[in-house]
Length: 102
Length: 423
Image 1 (cartoon, rainbow over the protein chains, first blue to last red):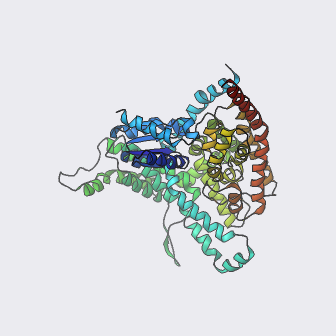
Image 2 (cartoon, helix red, strand yellow):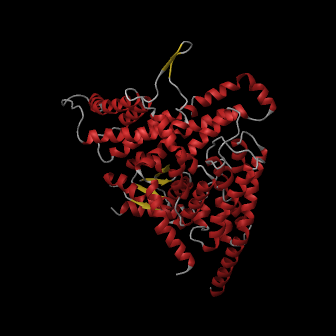
Image 3 (cartoon, one colour):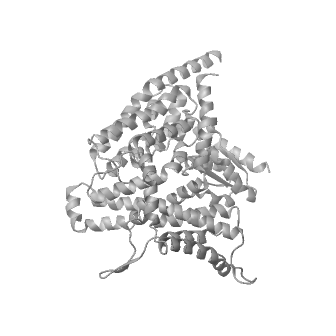
């Protein structure tokens, strides 16, 4: 599964990427997880299976959905609590749930 | 409803939506994306300035014979920034329209925008150098012209494509070739328009646009406008919205203009005209939450201490999200005052100190992840006074956070004890 994280500059979400990769490894899962800036997101969305947005950029969700809809890729905002605690496992499970809903 | 609920409600439902709507305006969004693409060029331009003006006597002596080379490097980057902006503007605005109409091609849009803009700069000839392009307004001063011309040109382009007023190629022509011809009529129309304005009508459109935007830039660059900008930035973050991102989309052209003029003044050896620049905000005002994190590291609340350890390294590079969402600062009534007003206090102090001449104004752009005091030192071309002011702001923020953090901590400890007693 390919998980794309998006925030303003792709910096703070990249902290979460490391934690999520670790959690995926512990679960024995081979996922591709990466973070980009909002401005570059349109080039990356087609390569993702699920798009997660940092809570501070939640106002961008509708635009992200517009970009993701033609590819049938689900989009959602990460919970502020998981984001703040940098909880890789929780966000990973959230991504899995989101991807398997369709 | 408590005061806090009411405040949150107002920010979330009244203040944030219009600001977000403005920031997502297709033109402002294209401008911002173009600037993000140009950021490496702006940073390189700043490094040329830094190398030329670094205040170590040995260095100055060493580079004296070639110091003009560094300024030349700056002129060929920052001094031509509007060319890049025109290109980026055309590209991103076309990319936006491509989402609606697949026949709009971003590269053609970039070409249309660039050559439309260049049409406004009459090429001159000179015995010594041959023909030349006058570069005076190809730097930051020409930015608004590049933006306006880019918007008008792309609007014409996409309208013609939409109405199908394009040259149609028979089937079987390779798409590369067909694309080049598709944009032929739109390019013809836009270039002809700007040619008519510049030559037969002999209008100095760049000069007119610059004059028109002068009051807007002067207003936007003022103490009060930037003060309000920081206030809105912090207020939006308080409800968990990326305030810096939103405010930047509105301020970006003004900030770039300020930076360009500040660098030009530094190059000419004049005093720096704008104090409240983006660099000022980055190095002195919107500094990292490190002071708060230091308090958390010393805390007897285990959760705060753990979060402090997690947040300290990113915070050194001005990444504040872990503490903003983790502590959290967002929607936390106790931390509202230090979060929103603390930064305004150091804004005013820093502005006054720089205006008084004790500390020079910054004019060199560094990546926003540069720690404040280092940014202040390098950003002013190596002023220790600037580094001290930035460090002092961290100390001031520490004492602004302190009483409010203590209240938060006491409250959390009380709750913690109650839960433990109940368990």
